[in-house]
Image (cartoon, rainbow, N blue to C red):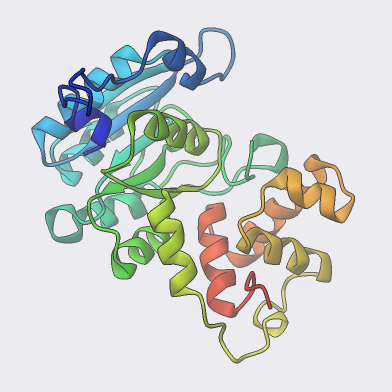
Length: 279
């Protein structure tokens, strides 16, 4: 559970209450997807207390709204089939119910959108719905939220199609920002998860990195390598002297050629092949 939610009434060292988010901070943290357009969030978690905490957090935060909640992955998929419009982001614990959460993440996957349909990652947009039949246009993106941060848990969620992975110790403000990033098509990881990913991929495979993806052009391989280093579209564009739109187009082409649905999946594939490792 996010520490800011779990510890709403915790006392600080000087005896005062530990605040959740002051009004100004809430406003700064709130999503900005256009006038009056809130980020719709669906919560899947076995713990009623965690769901209640997220419910209260979203009601207090500007630019977010709760689209629904479920106590199990099976119930969530059933509700999402009937929900229209579909939520933007589904918060889900991939390790719940003996791995049923990971199965649900895979069910939420959708086909990649055209290049111009993506923001901050070119892995979403108005693509076709997943096999689970989610209604209301683009299928929602999954953000894994768990107390587990071991390699197996993280990699299973990313391979299933999660757009990010954060721990339940994440602060309220960081959680809201993570939701916003995922809603915009980006990938996000809490610091401890990013560290574990770096450790997991610390030793590149011996096979030639470039020969692992013969379907990619030289420029696409170059972009993929920079993605695997964790670079943003803006940084890649600046380094390669390209426009951000051109970089988004490259990313979309990479997703199609690698037959993956999200930017995070492409990064996993690249790092497993040895790309993105600084020499």
